[in-house]
Amino acid sequence: MNYIVVTIFPEMFAPFWEHGIIGRAIASGKITAGAVNPREFTNDRHRTTDDRPFGGGAGMVMKSGPLAGAVRSARRRFPEALTLLLTPQGRPFDQETALQLAGQNALILVCGRYEGVDERVGDALIDMEVSVGDYVLTGGELPAMILMDAVTRLIPGILGGEASAEKDSFSDGLLEHAQYTRPRVFEGRGAPEVLFSGNHKAIDDWRREDALIRTLLKRKDLLEKRGLRPEERKILKKWVRDIERLLDAQSLPGADPSSGA
Ligand code: ADE
Image (cartoon, rainbow, N blue to C red; front, side):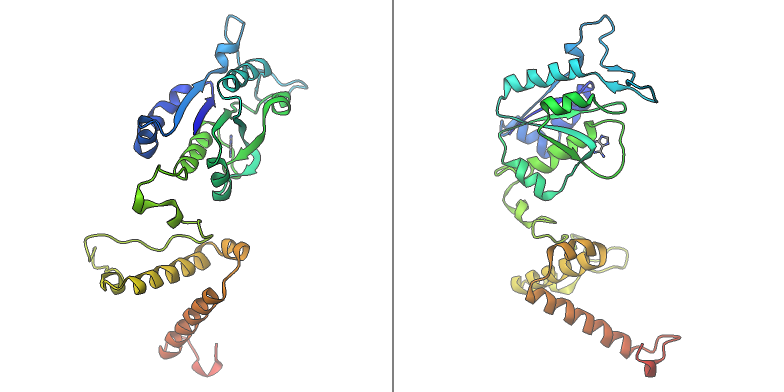
Protein backbone atom coordinates (compact mmCIF):
# COMPACT_ATOMS: atom_id res chain seq x y z
CA MET A 1 0.00 0.00 0.00
CA ASN A 2 1.17 3.50 -0.84
CA TYR A 3 -0.46 6.51 0.82
CA ILE A 4 -0.14 10.09 -0.34
CA VAL A 5 -1.85 12.71 1.78
CA VAL A 6 -2.73 16.05 0.22
CA THR A 7 -2.64 18.53 3.11
CA ILE A 8 -1.55 22.03 4.01
CA PHE A 9 -0.32 20.58 7.36
CA PRO A 10 2.08 17.77 6.38
CA GLU A 11 3.91 18.11 9.74
CA MET A 12 0.85 16.67 11.49
CA PHE A 13 1.59 13.27 9.93
CA ALA A 14 5.21 12.79 11.00
CA PRO A 15 4.47 11.47 14.52
CA PHE A 16 1.67 9.29 13.20
CA TRP A 17 3.94 7.71 10.61
CA GLU A 18 6.77 7.15 13.09
CA HIS A 19 5.03 5.19 15.83
CA GLY A 20 3.42 1.85 16.57
CA ILE A 21 2.27 -0.60 13.96
CA ILE A 22 2.12 2.06 11.23
CA GLY A 23 5.68 3.14 12.05
CA ARG A 24 6.90 -0.46 11.82
CA ALA A 25 5.04 -1.08 8.55
CA ILE A 26 6.72 1.97 6.99
CA ALA A 27 10.16 1.15 8.41
CA SER A 28 9.95 -2.38 6.97
CA GLY A 29 8.81 -1.11 3.57
CA LYS A 30 5.42 -2.88 3.72
CA ILE A 31 3.72 0.47 3.16
CA THR A 32 4.91 3.88 2.03
CA ALA A 33 3.51 7.23 3.11
CA GLY A 34 4.15 10.78 1.97
CA ALA A 35 2.49 14.17 1.76
CA VAL A 36 1.96 16.77 -0.96
CA ASN A 37 1.25 20.33 0.11
CA PRO A 38 -1.14 22.39 -2.05
CA ARG A 39 0.93 25.42 -1.01
CA GLU A 40 3.63 24.16 -3.36
CA PHE A 41 1.17 24.66 -6.22
CA THR A 42 0.30 28.31 -5.59
CA ASN A 43 1.67 31.13 -7.68
CA ASP A 44 0.99 34.21 -5.54
CA ARG A 45 3.38 35.84 -3.10
CA HIS A 46 1.40 34.70 -0.03
CA ARG A 47 1.01 31.12 -1.31
CA THR A 48 -2.72 31.33 -0.74
CA THR A 49 -4.70 28.10 -0.55
CA ASP A 50 -8.09 29.53 0.48
CA ASP A 51 -10.42 32.28 -0.66
CA ARG A 52 -13.82 33.81 0.11
CA PRO A 53 -16.85 31.86 -1.14
CA PHE A 54 -18.67 33.11 -4.22
CA GLY A 55 -22.05 34.45 -3.09
CA GLY A 56 -20.65 35.56 0.26
CA GLY A 57 -21.12 33.95 3.66
CA ALA A 58 -18.93 32.90 6.54
CA GLY A 59 -15.67 31.02 6.28
CA MET A 60 -13.23 30.31 3.52
CA VAL A 61 -13.08 27.75 0.74
CA MET A 62 -10.03 25.80 -0.41
CA LYS A 63 -9.03 27.07 -3.82
CA SER A 64 -9.27 24.69 -6.76
CA GLY A 65 -5.90 25.45 -8.40
CA PRO A 66 -3.44 24.52 -5.62
CA LEU A 67 -5.52 21.52 -4.58
CA ALA A 68 -5.80 20.21 -8.15
CA GLY A 69 -2.07 20.76 -8.67
CA ALA A 70 -1.28 18.73 -5.55
CA VAL A 71 -3.66 15.88 -6.43
CA ARG A 72 -2.31 15.67 -9.99
CA SER A 73 1.24 15.58 -8.70
CA ALA A 74 0.28 12.68 -6.39
CA ARG A 75 -1.40 10.92 -9.30
CA ARG A 76 1.70 11.17 -11.43
CA ARG A 77 3.48 9.16 -8.73
CA PHE A 78 0.72 6.56 -8.45
CA PRO A 79 -1.46 6.70 -11.58
CA GLU A 80 -3.56 3.73 -10.40
CA ALA A 81 -4.34 5.34 -7.00
CA LEU A 82 -7.88 5.81 -5.75
CA THR A 83 -8.40 9.47 -4.77
CA LEU A 84 -10.47 10.04 -1.64
CA LEU A 85 -11.71 13.30 -0.16
CA LEU A 86 -12.23 13.33 3.61
CA THR A 87 -15.44 15.24 4.27
CA PRO A 88 -18.41 14.99 6.65
CA GLN A 89 -20.55 14.66 3.51
CA GLY A 90 -18.88 11.41 2.49
CA ARG A 91 -19.79 7.75 2.74
CA PRO A 92 -19.61 6.66 6.39
CA PHE A 93 -16.30 4.92 6.97
CA ASP A 94 -16.67 1.45 8.46
CA GLN A 95 -14.81 -1.86 8.69
CA GLU A 96 -16.21 -3.04 5.36
CA THR A 97 -14.95 0.09 3.58
CA ALA A 98 -11.58 -0.33 5.32
CA LEU A 99 -11.36 -3.90 4.02
CA GLN A 100 -12.17 -2.79 0.48
CA LEU A 101 -9.58 -0.03 0.59
CA ALA A 102 -6.94 -2.41 2.00
CA GLY A 103 -7.02 -4.18 -1.38
CA GLN A 104 -5.84 -1.06 -3.26
CA ASN A 105 -2.24 -0.46 -4.29
CA ALA A 106 -2.32 3.29 -3.59
CA LEU A 107 -4.61 5.82 -1.92
CA ILE A 108 -4.49 9.60 -2.29
CA LEU A 109 -6.18 11.18 0.72
CA VAL A 110 -7.27 14.76 0.17
CA CYS A 111 -7.70 16.70 3.42
CA GLY A 112 -10.05 19.65 3.26
CA ARG A 113 -9.70 22.62 5.60
CA TYR A 114 -11.84 25.69 6.22
CA GLU A 115 -15.48 25.40 5.16
CA GLY A 116 -14.72 22.89 2.44
CA VAL A 117 -13.11 22.54 -0.97
CA ASP A 118 -14.17 24.12 -4.25
CA GLU A 119 -16.82 21.76 -5.64
CA ARG A 120 -15.11 21.57 -9.04
CA VAL A 121 -12.06 19.84 -7.58
CA GLY A 122 -14.35 17.12 -6.30
CA ASP A 123 -16.06 16.78 -9.66
CA ALA A 124 -12.79 16.61 -11.57
CA LEU A 125 -10.50 14.58 -9.33
CA ILE A 126 -12.20 12.74 -6.49
CA ASP A 127 -13.22 9.08 -6.82
CA MET A 128 -14.94 8.77 -3.45
CA GLU A 129 -15.87 10.96 -0.49
CA VAL A 130 -15.41 9.49 2.99
CA SER A 131 -16.68 10.65 6.39
CA VAL A 132 -15.41 9.29 9.71
CA GLY A 133 -18.56 10.25 11.60
CA ASP A 134 -21.48 12.61 11.87
CA TYR A 135 -19.57 15.49 13.42
CA VAL A 136 -17.56 18.31 11.90
CA LEU A 137 -13.80 18.53 12.45
CA THR A 138 -11.56 21.44 11.54
CA GLY A 139 -9.95 19.48 8.72
CA GLY A 140 -9.52 16.11 7.05
CA GLU A 141 -6.12 15.34 8.60
CA LEU A 142 -7.37 13.38 11.63
CA PRO A 143 -9.91 11.51 9.45
CA ALA A 144 -7.08 10.63 7.02
CA MET A 145 -5.07 9.18 9.93
CA ILE A 146 -8.09 7.21 11.14
CA LEU A 147 -8.54 5.80 7.65
CA MET A 148 -4.86 4.88 7.24
CA ASP A 149 -4.80 3.27 10.68
CA ALA A 150 -7.89 1.13 10.08
CA VAL A 151 -6.83 0.17 6.53
CA THR A 152 -3.17 -0.58 7.28
CA ARG A 153 -3.87 -3.13 10.01
CA LEU A 154 -6.00 -5.09 7.52
CA ILE A 155 -3.18 -5.46 4.99
CA PRO A 156 -1.86 -9.04 5.13
CA GLY A 157 1.45 -9.31 6.97
CA ILE A 158 1.06 -6.10 8.99
CA LEU A 159 -0.29 -7.57 12.23
CA GLY A 160 1.68 -10.41 13.80
CA GLY A 161 0.10 -13.92 13.96
CA GLU A 162 -1.97 -13.86 17.16
CA ALA A 163 -3.33 -10.36 16.67
CA SER A 164 -4.85 -11.36 13.37
CA ALA A 165 -7.44 -9.02 11.93
CA GLU A 166 -9.89 -11.92 11.50
CA LYS A 167 -10.39 -11.99 15.25
CA ASP A 168 -11.31 -8.31 15.31
CA SER A 169 -14.26 -6.57 16.64
CA PHE A 170 -16.59 -6.21 13.65
CA SER A 171 -14.86 -8.86 11.51
CA ASP A 172 -17.90 -11.05 12.20
CA GLY A 173 -20.25 -8.10 12.67
CA LEU A 174 -19.97 -8.39 16.47
CA LEU A 175 -18.15 -6.42 19.12
CA GLU A 176 -15.16 -8.09 20.70
CA HIS A 177 -15.55 -10.20 23.86
CA ALA A 178 -14.19 -8.89 27.17
CA GLN A 179 -10.44 -9.24 27.76
CA TYR A 180 -8.55 -9.75 31.02
CA THR A 181 -4.90 -10.00 31.98
CA ARG A 182 -2.86 -10.17 35.20
CA PRO A 183 -3.43 -9.63 38.07
CA ARG A 184 -6.09 -12.30 38.52
CA VAL A 185 -7.91 -10.09 41.02
CA PHE A 186 -7.92 -6.32 40.50
CA GLU A 187 -9.29 -4.19 43.35
CA GLY A 188 -11.52 -7.03 44.45
CA ARG A 189 -12.77 -7.87 40.95
CA GLY A 190 -12.01 -11.29 39.54
CA ALA A 191 -12.05 -12.56 35.98
CA PRO A 192 -14.37 -15.28 34.60
CA GLU A 193 -13.27 -18.70 35.94
CA VAL A 194 -13.57 -20.39 32.56
CA LEU A 195 -10.57 -18.39 31.29
CA PHE A 196 -8.34 -20.30 33.76
CA SER A 197 -9.80 -23.71 32.91
CA GLY A 198 -7.37 -24.56 30.12
CA ASN A 199 -10.40 -25.86 28.20
CA HIS A 200 -10.05 -24.12 24.82
CA LYS A 201 -13.47 -25.13 23.57
CA ALA A 202 -15.13 -23.78 26.73
CA ILE A 203 -13.10 -20.57 26.45
CA ASP A 204 -14.07 -20.13 22.78
CA ASP A 205 -17.74 -20.76 23.63
CA TRP A 206 -17.62 -18.23 26.46
CA ARG A 207 -15.98 -15.63 24.20
CA ARG A 208 -18.56 -16.11 21.45
CA GLU A 209 -21.38 -15.81 23.98
CA ASP A 210 -19.84 -12.71 25.56
CA ALA A 211 -19.36 -11.06 22.15
CA LEU A 212 -23.00 -11.71 21.30
CA ILE A 213 -24.37 -10.43 24.59
CA ARG A 214 -22.15 -7.33 24.54
CA THR A 215 -23.22 -6.53 21.00
CA LEU A 216 -26.87 -6.89 21.99
CA LEU A 217 -26.43 -4.66 25.04
CA LYS A 218 -24.13 -2.02 23.57
CA ARG A 219 -24.85 -1.97 19.81
CA LYS A 220 -28.21 -3.52 19.09
CA ASP A 221 -28.13 -1.76 15.70
CA LEU A 222 -25.20 -3.95 14.61
CA LEU A 223 -27.11 -7.14 15.40
CA GLU A 224 -30.21 -5.87 13.65
CA LYS A 225 -28.17 -5.13 10.54
CA ARG A 226 -26.33 -8.45 10.60
CA GLY A 227 -29.03 -10.84 11.81
CA LEU A 228 -28.60 -13.89 14.05
CA ARG A 229 -27.51 -17.40 13.15
CA PRO A 230 -29.69 -20.21 14.61
CA GLU A 231 -27.03 -21.17 17.18
CA GLU A 232 -26.63 -17.53 18.21
CA ARG A 233 -30.37 -17.18 18.68
CA LYS A 234 -30.18 -20.24 20.97
CA ILE A 235 -27.34 -18.71 23.00
CA LEU A 236 -29.22 -15.44 23.51
CA LYS A 237 -32.48 -17.21 24.39
CA LYS A 238 -30.67 -19.29 26.99
CA TRP A 239 -29.11 -16.12 28.38
CA VAL A 240 -32.56 -14.51 28.67
CA ARG A 241 -33.89 -17.64 30.44
CA ASP A 242 -30.93 -17.54 32.84
CA ILE A 243 -31.70 -13.93 33.68
CA GLU A 244 -35.40 -14.71 34.18
CA ARG A 245 -34.49 -17.59 36.48
CA LEU A 246 -32.18 -15.34 38.45
CA LEU A 247 -34.84 -12.65 38.79
CA ASP A 248 -37.49 -15.17 39.80
CA ALA A 249 -35.18 -16.65 42.41
CA GLN A 250 -34.59 -13.31 44.08
CA SER A 251 -37.18 -11.50 46.10
CA LEU A 252 -36.18 -8.07 44.89
CA PRO A 253 -37.64 -5.18 46.89
CA GLY A 254 -40.82 -4.01 45.17
CA ALA A 255 -41.07 -7.12 42.98
CA ASP A 256 -44.36 -8.98 43.03
CA PRO A 257 -43.65 -12.59 42.02
CA SER A 258 -47.36 -13.32 41.50
CA SER A 259 -47.67 -10.59 38.84
CA GLY A 260 -45.23 -12.38 36.59
CA ALA A 261 -43.61 -9.00 35.85
N1 ADE B 1 -13.55 16.81 7.75
C1 ADE B 1 -14.22 17.47 8.72
N2 ADE B 1 -15.02 16.67 9.39
C2 ADE B 1 -14.89 15.43 8.84
C3 ADE B 1 -15.49 14.17 9.11
N3 ADE B 1 -16.40 14.00 10.07
N4 ADE B 1 -15.11 13.13 8.35
C4 ADE B 1 -14.21 13.29 7.36
N5 ADE B 1 -13.62 14.47 7.06
C5 ADE B 1 -13.96 15.53 7.80
